[in-house]
Image (cartoon, rainbow, N blue to C red; front, side, top):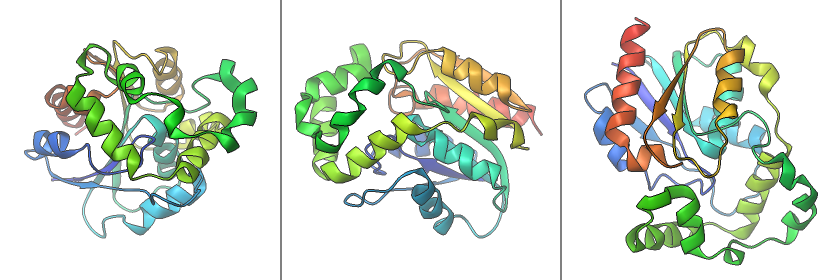
Length: 229
């Protein structure tokens, strides 16, 4: 059975993967990666962080959501040992909001406190945005410095790794959230169209697929991996 290496969203913590890891357990063990909470690291630095925690033996399925999609694509293009497949969830290969580029100049001064937690929860969770979820998101973001979050947001604004996608020589699955308020549907189409061996599956979920629909995501991953055997 493979090891699933799970890469987080913009928050960069490993706090939100318990349900997905449980759903994936019949298929293999999971390792959730956490990024440093207080260091301003861009995508190349985060790739190095993941490689430092890479499993030393066996097959690996790289699973990334949202912000970490470019990390997964950059890693896969390097062909790390044991990599057998890439799974991307509600993510992008280039700036997901190019119309906001004129606001990039404010990022060095931005703070996570500018956006109410309830608003952030609504964007990520849609109709599933309960008070409990808002409290969880607030607790997680409190652990991450503005410096780290600003560096990640800047990296997402500047990234464009579309050219790496055709060089990836393992199967790629893109899970697209039907009710995503953050990532437009075209990003999934673009990534899969550029992949050598790509597949797209729509999941009835808001942006945070792995947290709201972990069983459905795990079933789609299982079906994909069986299809590729």
